[in-house]
Image 1 (cartoon, rainbow, N blue to C red):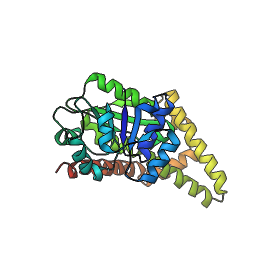
Image 2: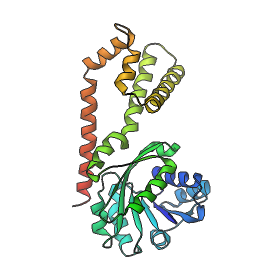
Image 3: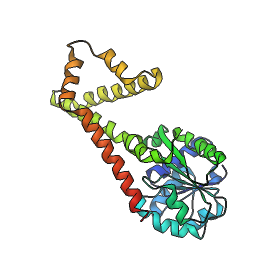
Image 4: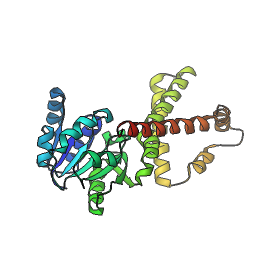
Amino acid sequence: MKTIAVLGAGKMGEALLAGLVKSGHPSDQLCFTERHLDRAREVTERHGVRWVDVAGAAEVADVLVVAVKPQDIEPLLAELKSAIRPGTLVVSICAGLPTALFEQRLPEHTAVVRVMPNTPMLIGEAMSAISPGRYATEEQLVAVTGMLSAVGRVVRVPESQQDNVTALSGSGPAYFFYLVEAMIEAGVLLGMNRQLATELIVQSAVGAAHMLRDTQEHPAVLREAVTSPAGTTAMALRELDLHRTRAAITAALEAARNRSIELGKINTL
């Protein structure tokens, strides 16, 4: 990839810029757009990447990474339609928006790749799933994989799975934060100092995540290794089952998946 322009310097847009700079991508081959001037100055000062307007980004970029909120996509695409150069690759990290939306609003045969990353991109530990549109080539998919590898791991999925990906990994970090928050509050309720409870739970979460990734064991196997017959863990897990925790998690992910589908429909009407 040569020049990359990130359209929208919110948290995810800035995280991608930071990861690219850190990975050695030349800063003079990076630029970004941002409606708020104060925010634009902050990003430029932190990462040494230049701010441009949308027309300027379309003029110089080989790759346009669309990182705006879904509700802001229509005016952006209207602006891009007359400015984008033939052969430019469009990479969307907008939740719920199908590649067909970009292909319909932009000039014919524009190559589009849809991406669902997540917020650990901020620390270089993202999980990103990519899907090609009708006109994206294998070479472009390889290039997008390389770009996103600067901020985490990348997998390819059929676009029909992207709403499921959004529910599982796109929103996934929030579920873990929710669980950790609940466990910390339970520790306080049990009489523990909040700072100590936080340290215990956060490190336990980090260690458990590393075990899952490094051992590649099924989570049930790792769970059973901690669960002695009639022990403390067994009693805790029984309570989780009595409160239908698994059913609640399934319902939560279905709700997230359905909302992702709704966002796509709203923006393609």
